[in-house]
Image: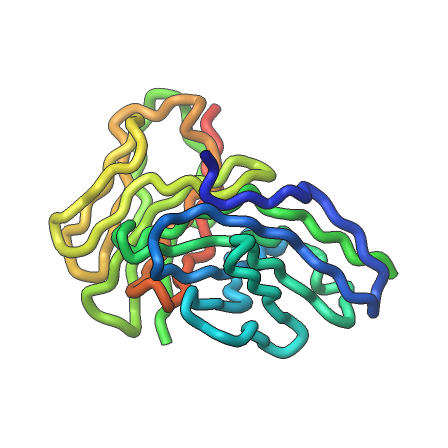
Length: 115
Length: 112
């Protein structure tokens, strides 16, 4: 079974609107971290936001917030006030304590922001 | 903060030729190091990881090998490239499940 599932291969959003990118995960490890990365067309991976499995509050970083629902094993990324520069591929990833700190990545969601 | 240097940025190689991609890390010591491959429009597939000098774990059987001759140097190699080795290769470092991985800018490898 896939450990990280991103069900939206592509998403469109109007500039200045909010968008939610879905991510569900599968683990039996009680301690894990969830990450979102942005990959522009140039290829570099840019870290956006982190959520720990024991964190009580949802993580926020500027226009990025993470909607963490532990019981449902979901960690959706919310981007508010979308900008044209947000057009990129977005990856959800998980690191587990029992997995030597290795990251498991989803297949990504390509976000296109329309002017 | 950590910086990952990875080169070359682009590489075109004939089938059957050897390969050596190098990755060096600045700003940290004793990092865990990782090699990923990314097919076009897809996610990252972990190829190798290393928790220390000379310690390499392979995630998938393949035509590639990795070495870590120094604490902050990680090398991806092949003796004979296959067409299926084409892709975007990323080197990353990271420690702890609560820390993001730091990535190099990647190498786009095309096999002809």
